Length: 375
Ligand SMILES: *Cc1c(COP(=O)(O)O)cnc(C)c1O
Image (cartoon, helix red, strand yellow):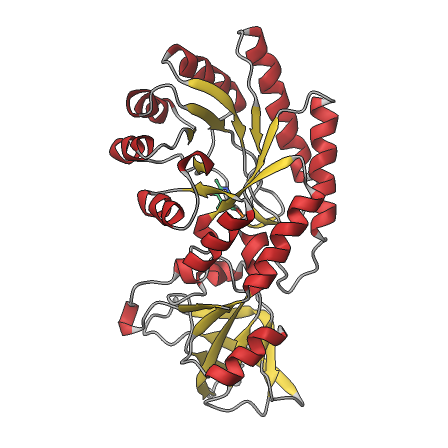
């Protein structure tokens, strides 16, 4: 348990549920990534946690930002980043939002289709553009496959078209899937990117950048490798496929920078026995709609603690507080809690700094969005 967060919770006794983020942990994760992956420029994926304090601190530390919408652009600009430090990485943009970003000074844009490229040509003339390619995302606990990217063959055609339409064909991007547990996944993706560099060189287009996306993990229930090993695998893949002609490298961490920095404190609202001989049901005041969306299909399995309650444990089904039966966190996964657990007890959900507050609904069933405290 993080001592700084413990002290804050003990002294402030905030209303639950709430997310408490230790900014020192975010700063340390940023420093470690810079240390182990010095070849890459860091673009923080703002969607992981858009708290103003996090953006401001990372801007101060020199980070760039991967943004997906006008509101994320405004957030970064208002908190210390300049437009040339932003990458509009969403491949699905309204043309008027592209134009607004361009007017604000953004000059780096992602695309993965012809129609999006044509919007960029009209609304962001001369901008640097990169094409996202499809990768399998095998081994990822939160895959980002299919919806994003095109085949490398199509990407080559589109980057030629980008030049013909007056854009600057700048590079290639991919995302191997979030919470990627297989260190081998970067090799194939980097190989595809390198092959595109060669093919385009034949068409007299010299790409200059590879965006290796995110994917580095946070510490949930399973074991993970340290960032040094991830950085090692990425660097090895880049060296293998690009030799000593390394292009500019962009990395877009979200989860790995902020995930382990946060704890959600919740309260037990109800403990129920259904009379069917099954597990105890434990209902918390946080659920799928106010912060724990990534428990969808029980994909992300958080570490959960019950401070002050020890002793014998028994299996539980964990659920949120709303009147929606989709609001069950874990039923199949084996979660156990002390038999001594009581209504009103605090329950702490660890490593919840990423994809929690930003995924909370504005007030489904009247439950307010997850409040964040950055300390
Ligand atoms: C969400 C996202 C990221 C962050 O991924 P993590 O796995 O959280 O590090 C990076 N790049 C893009 C384009 C994204 O959409």
